[in-house]
Each structure stands twice: as structure tokens, then as C-alpha cells.
Length: 220
Image (cartoon, rainbow, N blue to C red; front, side, top):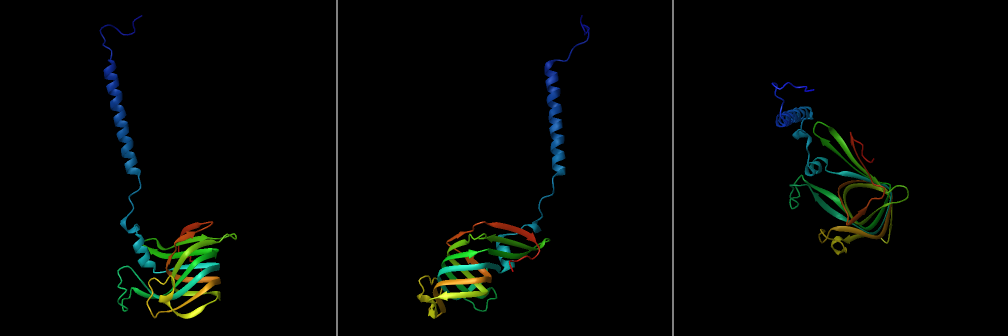
């Protein structure tokens, strides 16, 4: 039995494929438009901030530890210069007097590092790093800290106070005649210090935990 009378032409396979292709393209276009209109707007410029801007805004961070044990300790006076400052001009407000402390090998128990910055719109935000807990201290080789405030209970062994900083084995950046001191070993309990720069040849942070939180939540 013929379901289609002879006088009624049937659609060709080509026309069917062409129609299906057209419908598919239309559907894809509709989906693309829906995705575009439902995507969140791009991040405004005032949310973007560079590392240099953070450094200029914050100026200093905090470092604390239940205990610091170190060997090969040196310390002398120096100047920390912000970006764009002139270290040769003592009157430049971007120059800051600091104590430069160097430790050849240091262990830090329950270390905390924090920096509070003011971000546009968001306001005060705290970047905080913790490490060295559970009796497994963080360890730093050739640790150098530029600080303008330090507190704690300290014990030095074989300390020499008033030595010319230029005579230190690692006296790079110091000037002849600059007051300095050095010791074979140092221990500081309840360490609290504000820092303008911290650097090390190697810094092993056992049990590292980094957080970024709104508000001012420094180490101490």
C-alpha cells in the first residue's frame, strides 16, 4: 500500500539535512547569546592591584615566633628605601632607618608573617602566613631582616658589641665605621618585630598555611 500519492512530491534528503543544519546553527547562536548576557561583568580597574602598589601602601609587615634559634648572628644600622626613593638623600621621606639583622642559619617555631594593606573598595585586608608548628620549625639559611622594631627575650653567646660592620664576613651593603654587633649564636623567645624586608637564600616553611582575610588581623 502506497502511503504517499504519486502526485505529492516527498522532501529530498538534501533538504532535510540543510534544514537540520540551519536549526543547529540557530540553536548554537541562541545559547552563545544567553551565555554572554549571563556572564558576570569584567573586574573593574579599581579591584586590580600590583605587588608594587601593595609594597608602597603597606610599608612594613609583622613577624612573630614562639622561639628563634640561630647561628652566625650579625646586626648593624642601615637604610631601607621605598620604590622611587633616593638612598643618597637622607632627607628623602622614602628612606627609613632600620636595623639589618643577619643569621647564617635560623630555626623559627610557630612562625607567623602578616601584612595589612588597604585595597580599593574592599578596605583593609590581611595576608597572613603561618608555619613551623607542631615542634617542626621553619628553617632559613642566610636570613636577612630589615626591622625598625623588635621585642622578645634574647640570649646571645660570644657576642661582640660595637664592632665595625664593614669587618663582618657578610657585611655587604654596610659602610666603614657603622656600629655593629655579632654573636656565635642567638635565641629569642616570644619574638615580635615589624619588618620592611625579609629575605633568605633558602626558606623552608614546614606546615605552611596562607590566608587572606578582610580586616586587620596581624600576627600580634
